[in-house]
Structure formats: structure tokens, C-alpha cells
Length: 68
Image 1 (cartoon, rainbow, N blue to C red):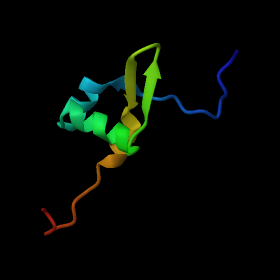
Image 2: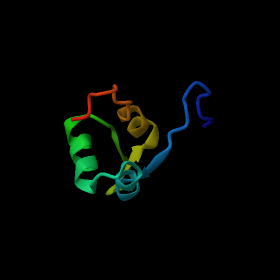
Image 3: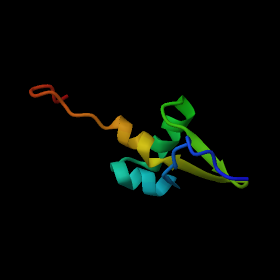
């Protein structure tokens, strides 16, 4: 069965890699999945992956003078 052409390719990675990617803990990634902030994708039985594009969407610039 061919993949639909209108579906984008996901950039899935493991939780430890995702945590390192954003320099946060693995627990933070797990909490974001549990809270619905990002989507976790189950691969096979127990493997969980996250989409790097969703992580990229969490990163936003800080306005000048608003570091807290």
C-alpha cells in the first residue's frame, strides 16, 4: 500500500535523543507526552518515539528584556 503523498514524513526519535536535543531531562519529555504538549508514537510493543518537528515548535525566541 503506497503512502499518501499529502502526509509529511515524521522525524521520529527516541526519548533520550529528544531530551538531549533540547537539553532537558527524559522525564520532561515524558511529562510533555503525558500532558499532551507533544505526541508520543508507540512503535511495536513498548518503544516510544517523538517527532523532532514538534520539539522544534516548542522553541521560540525570547523578547529583549524578558528573561525569567
